[in-house]
Image (cartoon, rainbow, N blue to C red; front, side):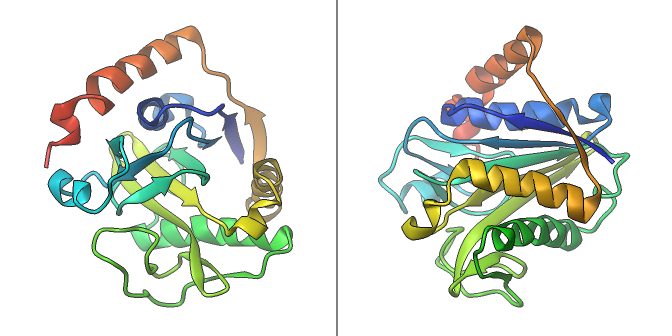
Length: 228
């Protein structure tokens, strides 16, 4: 099974969200899923596509706020490790039910953490959380470490494919393991558990042009940010 791998440098909140959406928009053209790992060049908060801006803005003083294409709750991006998976409609992942694709993604993450020596597990049931906030409490199949959620994700399924956006927020002592080690573990477990053969993805100038337009016209647009 062929997958693409894109390791991005630190990017702005708007560029990060635009890149994820762009990968979804070309998923069927590429015909192979893409795993993208990335980080943030400033403190920011992302929130779900269906959430109310006014309600989210009242929960945190952190700015900027950026609306995701996927659902889910409010997520802080300070020192987290973020990723997305863009899956074409021809993939068996696309045909899974939402709960099944969520569980499969987090099973992959959980196995990756365990291969790094962390005693993580999947939540067997939901843990009640604060309103609208992703990392307070947990959903079923979220990744737990010492009883606390350390990895969550949100999904969007369209005619273009399936987009999964996720955040990893390990305690400070565990983050000493490093982002690069985590990315290597994801690749290794992807090959061992799912038979993935990796090929590096590089964004061309034309790709960057479309991403820049998405960033400026959608994700930096007050109309989109405050659409609800």
